[in-house]
Length: 540
Image (cartoon, rainbow, N blue to C red; front, side, top):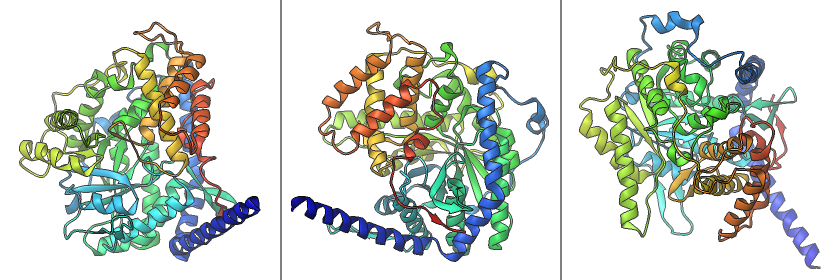
């Protein structure tokens, strides 16, 4: 009898969830949205597949020694040329403080009300792309654009609404490497980037323009100027389909891969009609550094905590971004401060906030026009630093002609030590983040930092690198092996207050990725198969 009742309960829950998903699909996937996404998919999915294959082939050539990362000879004329990007719209000319976060309704309202200049609504690294999350995120973004977003907390009775003045909204779609398996065109999954961008533009482009702003994107994970060229073609096609002026869709590109650091001028050139600036996505950049140099024993990194922005390779990367952007009239936005307030320990909290101040002072001194934070409490700290140091809305006049960066500077391996605590931190963060992600949570506070997919990527890739090259821990003398990883994982799990949920799946996936013969391209691609079981629908 108990089994029957449990079975009936599961069936009822599943039926209600299916009804909810169906209602979300009707709201988001209107005829116009379906038509635009299908059109973009048929026009550009083959080109995306070619570019992804190009990434794979290039990494293989680099690993075999046939090619070395460096500045491209064939685009020297672009780097040497005298040209500038189009002027930025009024609401993107001052970007001192940008806050990022998932498209959770309450978090979006708090971020828009935080006092930041820009809020990046993240459909990528901060969002676990369950079908429900993807659809709900689009609804929340639409309501934010219309300024019709509110939320009632049933636990506290508190109501959340937008202030009169809010941050400018920018949306980050998923990267070119991901697919949206729940949406099919010609019986094939839609590229997630096209789904996110197409649905957002259909519902919001005209409204945003009418309200004096515009449809703005942060473009993630680009690895070459050819991918920037593809994005320009996609967005130009969408502008024609929506009958909005060419260049209405503005973009900021994240320089968060090692190859892209060598092609910043070229990326700006390809998107010159619509690009506003470049952002230094530091966490993904470290992950990409590991990935593109996975074959090199001499490129094994120290503990993640030691790969700071003071490392020479990171200094070279960020200062080159400032110099390149300002030469072309584009904004250079600094990296993420991932700290969150530490409640109940005033001393520890002040130390954490002091790190944020020092990080932002370094960025503004280098010439950055703005910076990122992960929590509303950090907005006043970052703003105070930039307000004190910058008298106008930006620092475009600082050309940084003193900066000279070579390929060797960008490829210099960070110095430091590998420790048992560094290994344990990677396991703690990686496993707990993956477990939350598999439950549909993409932004997770862990150990007083806001972790997203980028830092989880570093954690699992670094452990793979240490095992693959037989790295020795400097403090214990142990060589990092699969056996050591298993022991550390068991010990760390024993210290957690709970290991229910999807910890078994998370441990298995982390172990699989960290001990594989080759380094997997993306954690999120590998984990996507286990995310949810919603049935795909044809949208064409």
